[in-house]
Length: 97
Image (cartoon, rainbow, N blue to C red):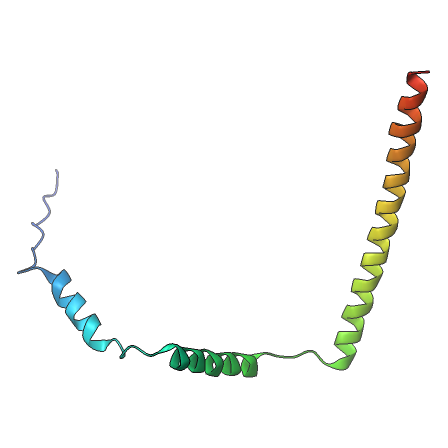
């Protein structure tokens, strides 16, 4: 047997206008450029105080890993460049002799 659900109750009036009026009442007064910049800098300072900064040992390890990775990547790119130059420049030139 099918079950019949009760009808949905409709709201008494337009609620969107009431919400918009309440939101506008809570909005702070508009500030000038200097006030907004000051607020921004205060918020930046607050966020920087929340940061967990790495210790010297952790910083040293991360720096070493990054430098080694960059050197390895540079060597790899250099090898690939030499190989591709050998194949395309020398190999293609020999095809047209």
